[in-house]
Length: 372
Image (cartoon, rainbow, N blue to C red; front, side, top):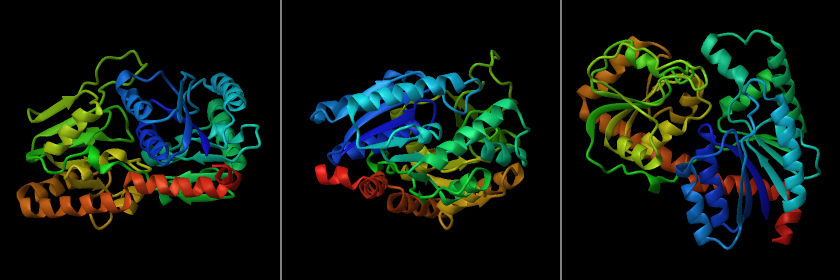
């Protein structure tokens, strides 16, 4: 079987793609990968060298810098990238198309098309602002593009039941839709390091969806590390001015090895997002042996109910009280860490995710299976 997969290098979709592509290649599937959004850094593509060294030519990578559909003024880039993909399909002759963007679900071709709904602009806006975004020309174009891609897709996948519900609420009910939870490889993380009394979160301070600034509204009961940018790219502004206490460290974006080390030493991870269709960082923290304190939002409740400790969404005082409870009680903290660790390995393992996608591909393209 030969798949053409699109991804983007801007956020967590790239991490998800790495896990899936690695799993597929290791199962003998041929993959042509196209990246969008920006040309990736060397650290982002390091894993590809290992694949090529171990493989037999079953992996082909095509980096591009076409804009993504959620970016302003992206219509021309989306049309150009669709033309590029059509030419590439003619060149490489894949059996099935896996798109991590909505737009390409409407690509004019006769191959099965899987569209993965990782997130969307409207559900993000509602989660952050409590209402749908105001009408605009760009938003009308965006919603029409998303709906057409969903309508034309052979199958639509979401990383949580909650995210699939958002697709159906704000766009349409896909003809074939299911949930496949994202996964990470446990071997990339170390839950056996000596733990420090430290709280870690990953999130850009300017991103209201990630909501990392909530941790700064009241002093936390243990040293805090916030990993992520303090200013929004492309705004021309300097670092975001924040009033942080002496026990707060701001860390720049970490590479995978650095992040694994940081999570391995931390005792608590704060998943404070207001909007999180899945959340790879909390999963990585769980695989690193951290207790998980999570905002009580539907997707995180769906994934971690019975394992994480929840606080009221966007409530800094309740967050602090929840943190104090865990900091004061190391035995409870260890119990919570063990619960999320087991949940992560049982439900959100990369191998399980890969197997579920492979079953989907085989169901959609039986001719490719017969030819394999």
